[in-house]
Image (cartoon, rainbow, N blue to C red; front, side, top):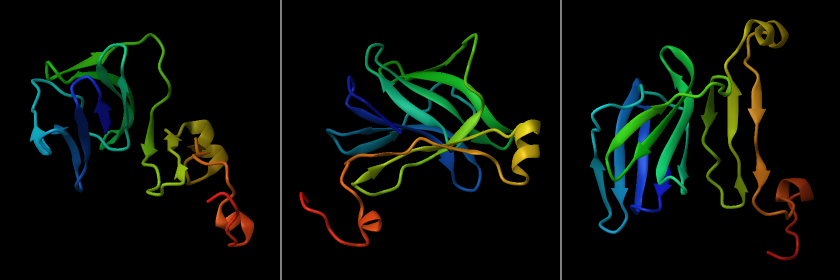
Amino acid sequence: MAYDRANHRLVLFGGTDGGYLGDTWTLNLTENAWRNVTPASSPPGRTGHSMVYDRSRGLVVLFGGRNGGGYLNDTWAYDTAKNTWTQIATPVAPGARECTPPPTTLRTTSRSCSAAPTAATRAQAGPSRPKRDFAHRANSSPSPATTGGRRTSGR
């Protein structure tokens, strides 16, 4: 999900309901109304992808994820005003991966991405796949877990 600042819309693509969804929805924040926008073409259905708004181009950019065929490393751009998805061909791309959503706390923001397993990583890691954790603290104050449950000043 990403917020399109120019068009004042929240854009949602895909997800899962037991299968892999490939639908595009926008939330008009002025009217508080969701709309299934059904563009002529879309990325393949997926879950675990990343989306961000590119302010300089006025596009929502989607990367990676996972579907029934495995991990993905494709890149797509969505133009909210024109209701079009366009695949972006790049000469080099990051490896295929899926990302998990950030935790739902106000104090911590993080995103954890799992790279697609390769023969080398499967041999090293055994049955579990390697994780790349891109977590950071939104606030530099220590958490209760790191202070023995005591609250620290400044809160």
